Length: 127
Image 1 (cartoon, rainbow, N blue to C red):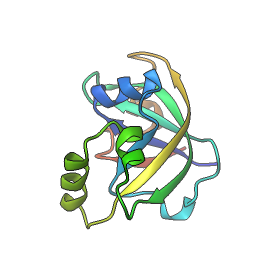
Image 2: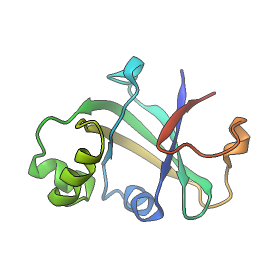
Image 3: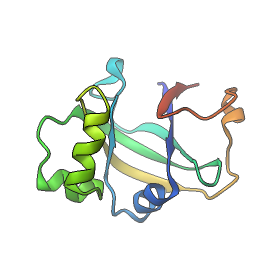
């Protein structure tokens, strides 16, 4: 099974590790894996700490056609910011449903451990 490396700001990583944020919003999602195999492993690269600090397990990704109060709550992002983020892309927005988390802390892994020279802009397959 393919695994994913995802870049994320420290603020969002902390909300995910705390269990408060259970939906990650992205402008893209893996086409070949929608829905993803339940429990696919996604390594989180903290862009502020410049290291992979943990793993999330994602049950599935789905296109978000309507931004509901539940999406706002689960993503920990305001409606206004979600709409602006969606408008910056191709008008598409995907929700990555988080079903589990393992936090390991800074300096656990680095992109080089996956034989890639730098962290992805958003996400990429690894291994």
